[in-house]
Length: 365
Image (cartoon, rainbow, N blue to C red):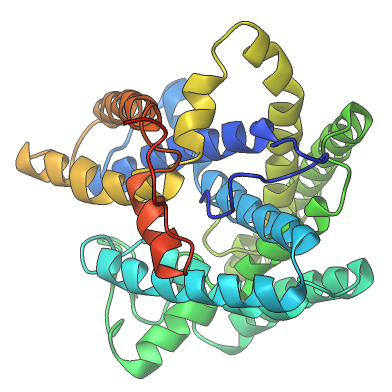
């Protein structure tokens, strides 16, 4: 989500608009994945392959970008100021996220809140410590997957999670077997903190990040395919854990997700200048700065409209794709019109007011 101040810097005084572009692409991907989920959409061919490739990747990109935003904030402010701001935002996101969960069980915002609270203590950690934390989170989930029952609470046919609102069920879902559990998903935030320490405004860094990220993605995908082929006849659960699907989020899913996220971020940073030159960048970056508002809107407005139209369950993948495109086009139009009067989206304004930095004036009367 776009949860960082507007003067997000790579170079002094310059906003990294490529990050806004990446946030927009992450939003588009999440809308498609979530609409497909609630519509129970199935398909085949290229569209099915594309939809499957997006699962877990769009959300991972969102979380990595959140880490980048936190890291950039920490570069500009003293730790105490950053920590207080992040803490207040986390509480705000926890409240909004839990409200969302009553309508859409795959909400990500309440996970964000916990990621942020933990990230406060990592802002000043060295890169070496951050790498150890990442490795520990990934290994911790792999160990827990063998010790505990990953399927506990789940009905995988309906995607219902029983006991979510009990203390035990909530904690288990949050830290182990939910849609985006802290172990290992917090590793994406930590990865973003590391990326924020790079000279992201430099083309050389962007090119290096793109090449390294593609290499990580290809290596993780290839290694996973080899190991899954070896493990499949021996242990089906082990084979699932060694795969690159987001459920369960095994080590190779995490590494491949980091590779994809890093590559998309690098590519967006590279493309920002040429897209700005031809005058179309603003149509992507404007909604990219309002992703908190648009994420919540896709739950209440987008999914609400689908329910009113009777499109929940047993729908075609093509219908889910059309619904996603229509919502995203409406989101772009809304964000562009809103931005002509206000600097930030509606929920972004509310959040800044709650954390003590109110948006007092529109851009123009």
